[in-house]
Image 1 (cartoon, chains in turn yellow, blue):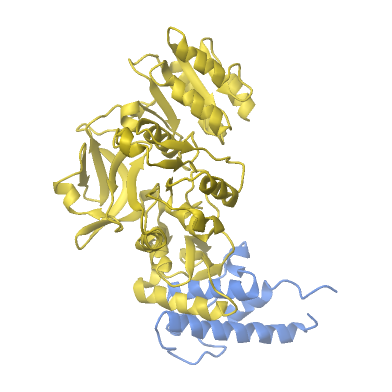
Image 2: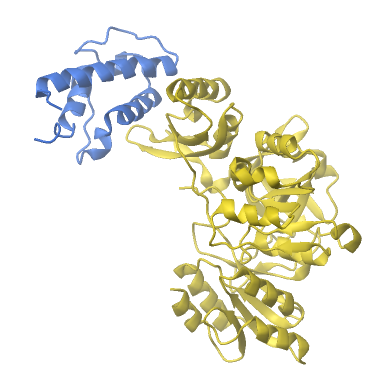
Length: 414
Length: 96
């Protein structure tokens, strides 16, 4: 499917950075050295090194960079083609075009500039030189691009890893190369803590993003790596980088609404969704009539938040709720409760079909339990019943060996 | 399995009874009347979420959910009818 999609994407004056494309990263380097700008650069390689070289060369040199997802699905390929044929080019600076990772609805292409991709990055080479960033994220996605540019702009080293290798091997590789800064989803961090390579890291910087960070994972990372600064990054493909929370507590301070971090404003709408407004609004949907922003420049993030004493905590996504006989359940809330029970490593909560209530809550759990699994499960169920309303308590708890994650490193929601 | 149809009905009945009481406990309700054959399900005290939980627990133990297998929906009214639904959809006993 990849080849076919690439073939359809090929008009006249483009430079291809693709495995079987017409050009290689070497061409991008020559482009960088030569005069004139490339009309468009298309990056669609499975090799992170090729991608990284091309990306480094394309900024400020190409008018538009289209980043084809590593796992290219038909609807996304179609969107790329449509946009390609209709979009007038040249906006004055390089446009970085990425596909949203949303699993439902029409895939969207969002175009960014270097500014909107790196809003919060510190450009202090002296401080930056102390960090050796590892890359676990896919370079062709927003989170990967962010790590890439942030490490580059701040003068840090960046250690790529082979995405075809299993996680344990990639972590071994990063540790062997003295990686001391890493950005990953909370789900990935839980897996990292389960790996034997976890012992070999001396992190100075731990960054979590892309999913809700709950208190147990923040605490576990704090215990394991007391020297590290732990940052939760709130960012999305649409909104770009929003803000960072560095106090090691889940959610963000309520005071952020009154006194927002630099460059961003936050607001809750009446339904409890978080809205953000960034100073720089370079980003936008490509080839779509709808705007990312409302008329006043706010973006609805689709993330539900609720106040808990002096914090706002994230409840989940608008479209992710489980419906138990008309009562909505955010799987993330149940995962948070399960995650706080001793022995739980990772929990994935999902809807199970029921002929009686439409859906019921079910949970798959990776846990440190030996032979007393059934007793432990009963205690976990009691723990859930104590902390959750009846319809939110999992009707089914399964102990599993592993929990699937998406290419973006997030829990694979069904 | 070497059991006769009648035996397996008894075994199914025993499992359903045990899980029924467990579902009542989970929903924190008392059994409103004895759980005999003629017990009307809606009078047992178990609510719809309780039944949803019961069906999930039984699927875990028996390996099937008859209510998602049936083409025409059947709504058992009594405990006997409930047990019969499970007996009817039970996978045929073991290899010959």
